[in-house]
Length: 455
Image: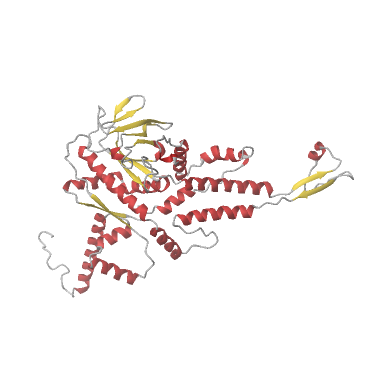
């Protein structure tokens, strides 16, 4: 009989939230939980004597796996209308690429991230806030659990007041028809009566993979990253402690001698030890398997990197530019799932932003049509000489595969609008230079210039 198919109640493991919190701390290079919680359990007697030796592995891996918004992106709104231009202006004010860079790092280390459009108190402006799982609770629709728009209730721990010395947090509770702050008192978030003035919840979700089980909202946490950071940090601290404790010989006196007499003996190059004939003195050199310990930890980290599509670390040889470029190309080949997750989150964010901005603090700006978002992420290419790269770019542009502006945007990490300005200026300067080179003696550089109006 398979009891798993019978009705039952499954509660979430409380450690799940602890893992999410620690991963968030590790991403922020905060390792106090290892020092205060893990080390005392592993080494109850000697943990106070062990010095922290933390290496930011989670932070480093997150940055390696999520280069999308550091290289520069192109973002196009399709199937919109004139109202869609509002999104571009609001995105510029939010510094959206910086926010999405943070979202991509959180996504790699948490599996699920909730985005929230929240009004800035006292100003008709918006803040885009990103929350990892441990700061949220979602009562999902059991038949549509992955869709946050169908959730019965969402509760998020948000900051309500902030001073130099402290931050006061409360709960923002969002239902299908209301949004309120629950703290010292209950107040509306978007309207005074707490009603929700949007056509959809002011939330969007970025997720890697499907929910962990039917009826669950959250995608699986990368517990392997959590365990790897703890394993490596404790191993490095143990290496240092072991090396410090065994780097010198242990003096041993045996025979007819008391403990107090042994402790009173002075040692050093300018002292002489006097012992009874029955007593002996020796120095014992301890033996350790520290090299095997170090090798085991290093191999573990290399194996973990390989599973994420990264090359093992090589600590002995200098990394050339070409070798690093090839590693980035290998990594990009493993990014399909993350790429799709970021594109999906961009579309969900645009739909939510259009809904929120259609209300826009009751200004009556009219309905904004939610566009489809087309993203272009720069990829590392194999090194090529300048001539062949230029020929490839020219051919791609002539075939309609790309355009000069999109090539400039991808290489310089600027928006498509800024790239168009750069291309126009560069082409104008090039044309002026060509004209100057062809003008003969006594001829005008600009023969059609009207001297009366300066045009």
